[in-house]
Amino acid sequence: MSLLVALPVVLPLCAAIAGMLTLGRPRWQAPIGLAGSAGLLAAAIGLLAWTWREGIHVLEVGGWPAPFGIVLVADMLAAVMVVVTGAVGLAATVYSFRVVDQGRLRAGYYAFIQVLLMGVSGAFLAGDIFNLYVWFEVMLMASFVLLVIGGERPQFEAGMKYVALNLVGSVMFLSGIGLLYGAAGTLNLADLALRIAADSDEARYYTVVAMLFLVAFGLKAAVFPLYFWLPASYHVAPAPVAALFAGLLTKVGVYALLRVFTLVFTQDTGYTRELLFWISAATMVSGVLGAAAHQDMKRILSFHIISQIGYMTMGLALATPLALGGALFYMVHNIIAKTNLFFIAGVVRRLRGSYELKDLGGLARAHPWLAATFFISAMSLAGVPPLSGFFAKFIMVRAAIETREYAAAGVMLGVGLLTLFSMVKIWTEAFLKPGPAGAVSEGTVGAASWVPVLAFAALAVAMGVGAEWWWRPMAMAGEQLFDRQGYIDAVLGGAE
Image (tube, rainbow, N blue to C red; front, side, top):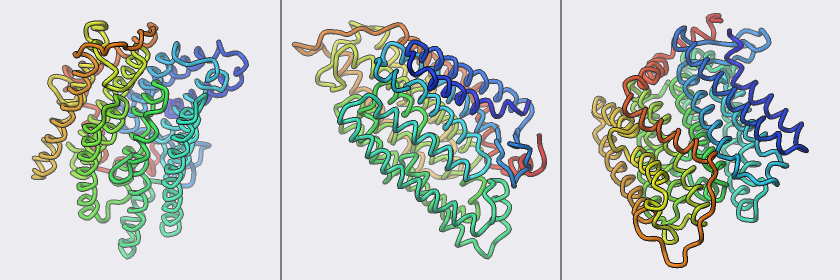
């Protein structure tokens, strides 16, 4: 059964290889991609159920025990995130069926989606910090190809900005790894936790190294002031690629922050939490103000990615079991809502030929199902009850009040109102107002595009109506993050 921990990495790898071997047969690309994504989701659900029943699981790759060998570790945080990865990957694959052109198919579009899913899953399951870096680079390579594949000049320009700035983060990440290994003599996360805690003489040194990781992961997560690469690149990507990026890529950076700053760097919690508090607040405010200032649907949604990241990192700043579990609940809710909003934006683009709000209008009357799914996803993002976003924000605000961080609660509530404002702006301009004179004639939207849109809208409702049920694994993940000893014992104590 321990091999189940490796399946979320192995299955996308096999699908990617099969896709590359059949590049000359474009009709095979979509079925192979579908099989890989569906297999990943099924394996991830099995892993989550197994972790829920029996606790943290560790796979020692090659039979080498930790901390000497590579280990894959599945706790509740990792298991939940791998399930969400499978769901987003499957949705993006299905959405792509009638969207992707033959040029992208021949260049391996579906195969690179599988490479991306493999990198994301590997990052969530990595038990040592060097392999976390490796999976980050796999993810970066695949995302760059997906961003520019079959594209025109604007995509290449955005792709160069994207990869250049992310490589800066990678250099800082690798530098931090070198400094960390030089001082601690290990890169296994559990072993690092023990050695850093025991080496009180080097506390200041480890704090400096921690700041390197904070900048590296902060750049990947697009926190303030390191977010400028995201709105400059995501808006030019094709709709399914933008949705895939919006759902997963920045969340891997948030995951890395949660993992490293609750397990490894815990020696200077007061300073780190204070810094994370201000970074999170600035991320929320700057992101939502950027969204309010734009009139392009895709750019508005891109800035909201930034704003919502601030809620997740605020959970790390508050650092209680409720806040950490709430950060995960918020992350899952946001992945579902944000991915769907980018899917819907792609449908709008195909129907009306533009993302500019001034060129849109009349969609509510012409396409009531599209209007309904947008309204559900947008109101969920804004935190309107009884949708998933309301309970995600409620948990985070409650965690702030319980720790007497009233300023954090105020910022979260205020940003929620501004999020509602920008979502209402899109709703009014694109869906309610009459369409402009001389609007572009409507294109066609295949059934494959509607399946993920309807499914993710239903998930946003289900996470709200059944919030107590969804909260249970998130609460367990929060407890495991807060009490790191269980993770350490599982990895170094010979579990599995």
